[in-house]
Image 1: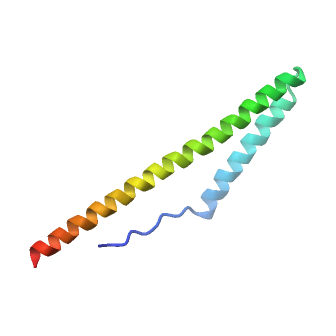
Image 2 (image 1 turned 180 degrees about the vertical axis):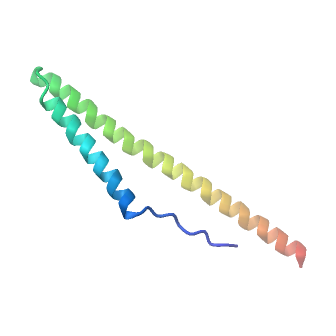
Image 3 (image 1 turned 90 degrees about the vertical axis):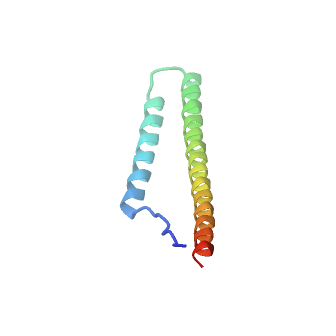
Length: 90
């Protein structure tokens, strides 16, 4: 059975992801802060933005976990197939 190399992101990719996340978060929060509306409306919008960010983190983690679980099942099935083929050839 072959060992599959783990996929890692480059430093440039990680920087781009964090930079875009922080820039969008700061600009959105700044836009909410500068809106000419009452304080409670700004609070409501800020709460919605923070809930959206939290939901995005949860969704991405769930999708990653499901993808990794699928890869593990595929590796187990591949190992079983290779064992059967090795037993058949000998």
